[in-house]
Amino acid sequence: MVDAIIQLLLHFAIPALVVAAIFIALLMFALPREVRTVFKREVKSYFVSPIAYVCVVIFLVISNGITFWFGGMLESGEAELYRPFFQYMPWYFIVIAPAVGMRLWSEEQRLGTMELLMTMPLAPWHAIVGKFLAASVVVFAMLVLSFPIVMVVNYLGDPDNGVILAGFVATFLTALCYLAITSAISALTRSQIVALLVSIGVCLAVWLSGLPPITDAVDNLPRWNPFWPLLKLVTTLGVLPHFNEFAKGVLGFRDIVFFLSFIAFFLFATAIAIRAKRA
Image 1: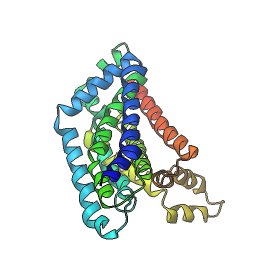
Image 2: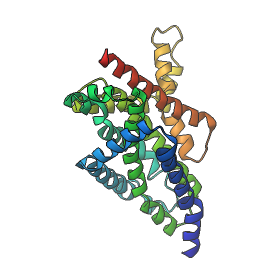
Image 3: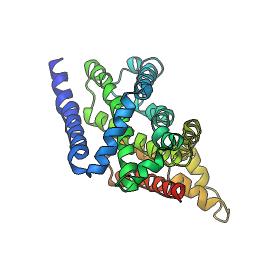
Image 4: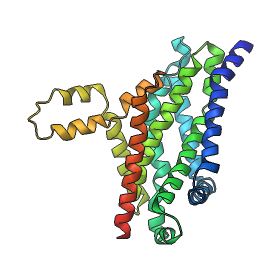
């Protein structure tokens, strides 16, 4: 038992704390003051309302329930979390990430405060990044609070905690992709419900487009098909292959670039949508 705790600390808890400390340091010191101001305002709005708490509770209930009762974690006899836990995580966040991010810009438009926000002495990207980071903190809190499942699997066996940490990083990056999509869609409508439903649909499409049967079907289409370039582009944007590589502990530079580029693209799309609204 003592050896299991030591391994958990060395290979999971301490690296996770280092990553969290770097993330917090970037938020507090590296970002411009305008971004920090928007960030603090948005974080406060999340945690003074029931939104964050409801999303966190729903996530923890669903993820733990499926892992233990439907994922067969206790019956599998293997000390690993990919099959019972991580492979289902992107499916949860297809709904939960849009629920967290649907109010990013829709609420500003509904209350008529977007114009006031845009007249403040800050650039649009300050507000976009600040709001996005605030929503990412809620997702980060969900993953941190799911830490007991790591303790359980370490108590039951001798897992590779480095792979488990990679699974959490892959899940976090995937959830951030969904949040970036939701941010862009939220900037297009003043209705939070519309932003939620459309974001769920787009996130689901982005996830399903990476499934092997779909990518294989697109690859087998004749090149003269007028829809082939569009379908090929959609499958290229599929998150699934990159998530799987990351979650299994294969930290490829190509996958990191994909996630960062994906997030940057949809945040840029958010900026375009906001400028169109202002025009």
